[in-house]
Image (cartoon, rainbow, N blue to C red; front, side, top):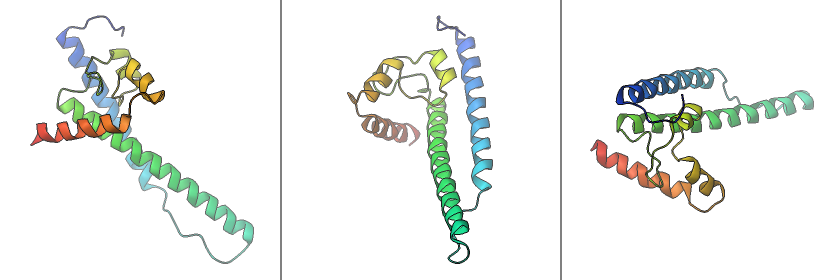
Length: 140
């Protein structure tokens, strides 16, 4: 869908599609996190087997950490949807385009502010903390 002006009905339809996509991704990640068990590498045996076990464990740890980060981002996006803030840039408070939301369902910045964050001209962590505090006030 292009970024022309949407009717309220079209916007609701798009946001419902995005919510469904986020929930599906959350379910997929949850299934993936439950599969690998992070076991302590064995202390004995063939050095190659021990090395392989260590590398495998480190890889599983990294995948789990990435998955947890993605879950956090998805939960934040769902919270923004629930509070009617989903389509608003957390830095400049301008609208985030529908095409950007469809491409990156848990984006929190418009294209211009994302570029500023990538160029280290704005501190994304500060922005995120500010909006988390704001979200808590809305919920309370």
